[in-house]
Image 1 (cartoon, one colour):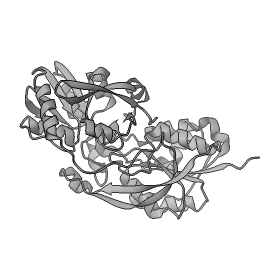
Image 2 (spheres, rainbow, N blue to C red; image 1 turned 120 degrees about the vertical axis):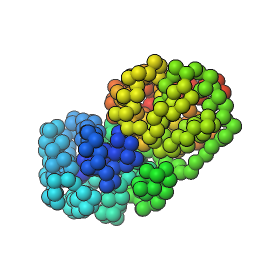
Image 3 (spheres, rainbow, N blue to C red; image 1 turned 60 degrees about the vertical axis):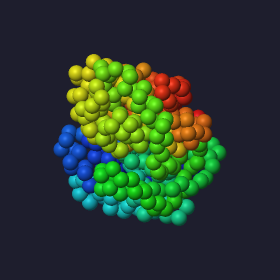
Image 4 (cartoon, one colour; image 1 turned 30 degrees about the horizontal axis):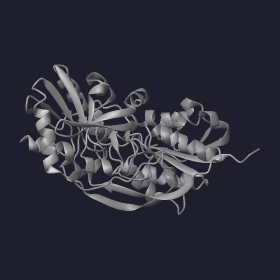
Length: 375
């Protein structure tokens, strides 16, 4: 009998809760998000990853955390597994992640697979043994760290390559996080916390987010002028980012850097809205369009910091009405890599795959490829 691949699995079941509630993260605000009616999505995202491993279940020996931190989903999907350790209470904590990650690593796992955001990556970094191979399934609001796959499906496919013995390059990636309190106040303060060993495959692992704010004032003024000439009947859903903030400033409006704003007839009718508020604003919209930006260096246009623009919002507006705004210099930072979509809805991601319209100047549009994974 061939040697089984020893896989560790940890899920942060609270990851991503703050996204649709416009809370800019989930650290310390899980109860608030749950009280607002936000449903946890981490289990669904990990399920997408594990489905890629179903044909290989006989080649896996899985060690996982109890309950919603891993065991419940593995049982649902029919994977044999061994539960390691215990939870400290009804609601999981960062301490649980670090303690259980250490206990799982003690079983000699070939790969520690975890799901969460930058906070979870920090927990794994705190508990990782030297040389331990890890891989993140993106499930959080903020994902600046390079230890995550571009989306859950890519994570599963990358693990499958390891299980079947394909040649995968070993690399290292930064673990980064920001101060969520400052983040909610519109300030981005990034800090490097360490490095982790990861399986490195360019199509599957995301690039580290580039920091800083670049505003090409003249170009943004031109794009803003074009938007204003589109007419007063259009409701514009403006995703987060310095580019969209620059557009609003060019119109004399006070937008939010890290939130989703809604523009109609030259006025902001919603600032830093939640997903539910956005849905309500769309009910009386005569015509609506979504304007998102690409995260510099990564290329994500959906699923990174703009979870308020959910699959139902995109479908209500229409896939054809999702536009990207990007200056030519920002497109150059992608070095030919496609835009990435990670909405959490596989069918929608596939619908968004292909050439997307990019506003890059006054009444100037370009076509740029988008995909669910980097190519």
